[in-house]
Length: 128
Image (cartoon, rainbow, N blue to C red; front, side, top):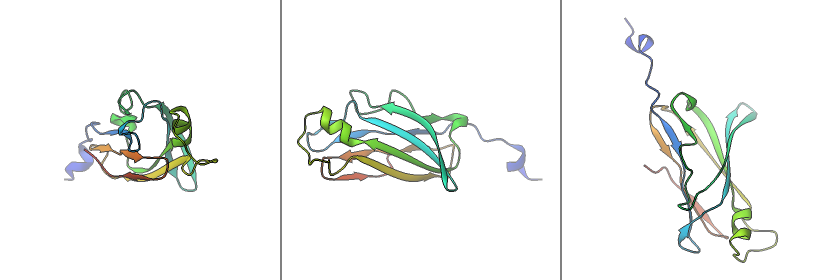
C-alpha cells in the first residue's frame, strides 16, 4: 500500500518577501513587485504587489493550494522605487528591474525570499 498516494498534503506552505534599502538603512516602502510562474518557455503573471511601510507585502504572495512546486520569478521594480525615494542614480538607472528566479520543491514549506538593494547592488537569500 502506498500511503503518500492516499494522503493529500495539507496546504500549509506560503511565499513571502521583504525588501530592505541598504543605501538608506531602511525598509523599501512602496516598491512595486510582480510574481511570475515559469512554465517551459512561457510564464504566467500570478500577482502584482507593492511593499508596505515595513518593506513587506501585507500577506503571503502565495499560500496553501496556490503554492505548488515549480519555478518562479519575482521582479522588483527598483528603478521606480529609487526615483520615488529621491535617491540619486544613473540615467538610466544601473538597477531598474531586478529579477530573482527560484524554485519551490516543497509546497508545504515557507519560502521567504528577501531582497537587499541599493542603487548599485543587490543580494538575496532564502530566509525563514
